[in-house]
Length: 88
Image (cartoon, rainbow, N blue to C red):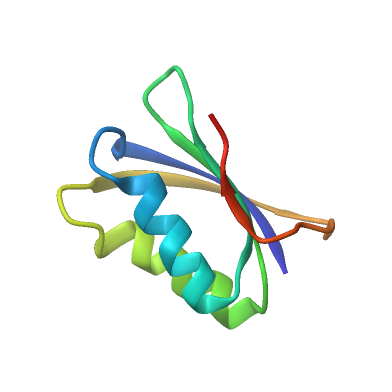
């Protein structure tokens, strides 16, 4: 399963990308994550449906000092990713 996701709220300046990268590695989810100029964080998550959903739930509620107020999900055709990267 592959999901393009945008997180809104307090998601920049709180370690959101790094914590997401670490959890993605633990869950064997590949893809990428990056900050956007409008204050949101954008990502592409790929893995089993269970692992992708678990990563999304983690991002929504378990990152200290982050407060996700909304998210936009779009399910995508799967691509090939090598690991999980932070894009700058």
